[in-house]
Each structure stands twice: as C-alpha cells, then as structure tokens.
Length: 188
Image (tube, rainbow, N blue to C red):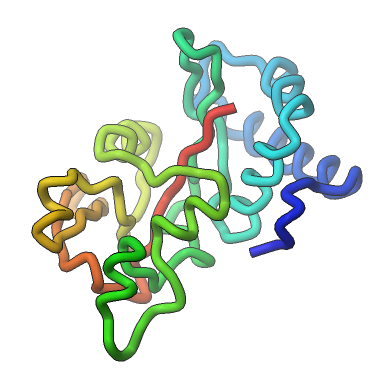
C-alpha cells in the first residue's frame, strides 16, 4: 500500500473527490435520497477516511456510496467494481491462515490488507445488499466476514454471482486464488 502517513496531498484529495463525485452522479440508483454535497462535506472533514477511499480506488475497488445509516449518522461506501478488486486478489483469509501455510504462501491475507487500508470486509448481508444494486463478481469471488464458528474449524466463507444467483461458499481459510479477492466497506 502507501506510506503510513495516511493523509493525502491537496492534489490527491482533489483528484479523488472528482473521481468519487463522477461515480456518484453516474450511479444515482445506488444512493437514492443522498446528496453529493453532504457526502463531500463529510469526506473533507475526514482525512483518514479519504486515505482509505484512495486505497480502495488504487486497488481497483471503485468505491461508491451505497447507503446512509441514520442511527450512526454515517455514509456507507462499498467497493462497486464489477469484479473483485484486482489489487486485492490472491489472498488467503486471515493472518492465522497465512501463518499456517508452509509453502506457496500468498503475499498477504484479506483481513490484514483490509485492516491496513482502514476498511472492513463485507458481511454476507452487505454482499447480498450490494448485489441488489447491480451484478457483481460474475467471473470472480470475494471473501466475506466468516462466522467465528466456521473460522474455528479452519474454514472461511466467500460469495459470488453465477446463473443470476448470489452463492455463498466455503473453503479452507488458507486457500487463495487469482480470481478471489475481497470487497470492503467504509463508514464516513
């Protein structure tokens, strides 16, 4: 990823806000009733969140606003790239899985990369809600938050969309594939 400063330059902020605004306006169906001016004001007041969104963008996530949580007063950004973000593939599930591999280790784990980016993996509920906004992961798959009971037994969960249906599957948490990455969520 980038340096640990976790703050963008003025030019980087301007460029990112332009990208996000363009995407927001192009995909109005993802965020009905939300105004860009309100989102932008929140983003400008949150430099660390902008840094995380920039990481989402750089790794191919194409983040966009998909909701607003009235209880917490937060806008919710999610990776809306058609396929699992290219810069976040070939990762096992978490650090425990990465450490358990003796040979042919992937570069990192989805949970560690997400934490370094300041984002969270989607839950199954969030993943299914995203699929209501379009068709995602028709050729790839994405790790999602795995229930502790499954993870304790060595497994991890991922989703994709095939045959116009969203599927949830399992694998060993230490597995990794060129077509499997993860989608993140960020609250601002």
